[in-house]
Length: 382
Image (cartoon, rainbow, N blue to C red; front, side, top):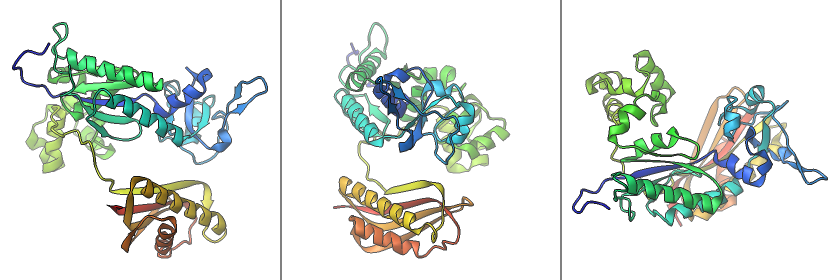
């Protein structure tokens, strides 16, 4: 049990569902377990039931189009296929991989299920997306207890209970990192994937965190990583070896200070249980470039559909938008945005479509389009 009068430790967990979309699909198609499976296809890639009751699956072989990998099973990742990769590139690396269509309605259902299962044990949750959350375990009963001479045994036991709840509620596995703060927790949840539970304290930073590449740290992007590498800073240990003046000299006062603290595992951000959405958007990338005149009918239908979906999103969340905007990406990959601030907030499909159409009139549509999007900003509660 916890020692009487002992100072309460801060325990923050980061829970990340393992290959979430792919894992949900494997519940539906268990015969694909252990195989290379890629999620990112369209309706034409829907499995076909054969006369004997088995499924015929599409594969990446010969794929042609502009689709991207939404996620992939670990077997597919072993072949170098990762989220965000173009499906044509993925087909070169793993032509044998099964290609399944995306089913966001199903993924959202399982997202609700796993978060409800976590809340039964630990209700202080920061939602970070469909497949990941932060959890404050500090005040969960038992989290401060020492178990079998392990000072962190209570927190470990609570995290295991959360994993058990998620498994029971969804049939899916997750990986959890438990540490004193959010920054370390996110790193820790990646260390023993899949189906891992990793508990780290400050004493574990040199052995488990410092050997990692700087790019593993959430907040260090490609440009910063390239600059760090040019300075001979490859690992987080290399970064921790630099003093603050050196880092602020090369990266500026604010970012340099953050790098100095992050490399040492310092982070005092709280778990935020509620935050208002800043904006909501809907967009689509076309299978082929579309021309504003020759493909007007198709473009108009897509534009209206996006506006309707966006209006539904707003109404479901109880929000209205004072600003409506559009996003266009042309055949040369140039991206253009336009926004319109309205006298009154809107949430119905017709008003969203009308405002987005006014934005569209302010764009030169002489080039073919790759992507079209509609955005709602300056949100207010209805």
